[in-house]
Length: 191
Image (cartoon, rainbow, N blue to C red; front, side):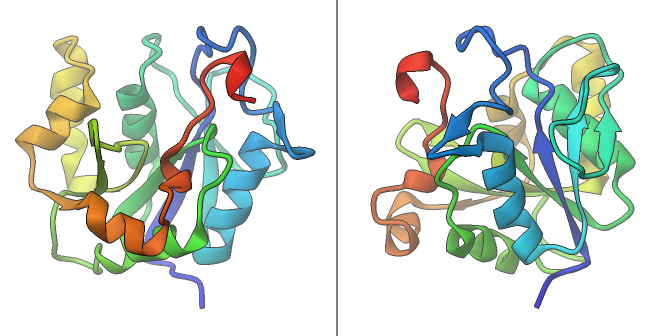
């Protein structure tokens, strides 16, 4: 059964500086990265959209949200997803998570009940929060706007400052033993 009180948003509007080319269309085992993420999110949620830069050609036939701010930062993409959201919350995923596991996505969604709950539900990895596979409540919009206007673009800092339910690494490993869902593709050698 797909959930409809939380939307899905896949961030594809990044600059891909480390990769040197658009990551969304790069293939992992013959399937574009963004398509892999979209397939998983679409299996759990009734509504999934891509967050793209204005003028970009959407990599899939999914509906899109244009990220109209000039800054290229994940926080700006999360803001665009929340601003367009017509539900209580958005599950945000980066387009460069080729091995995202549906069981981990379902665990995140289960911890973000309709209405009440924390501002963010995010995995906690060895390096801190994993903010690009997390559920964000729409009530965070004013805080994101304040931070973006002030040039504070760190999602880690945001998650430190708001009510965040962190899923500890030990719990994550019960679902995804090697934490493959949290591995992203940033450099050509990662492919």
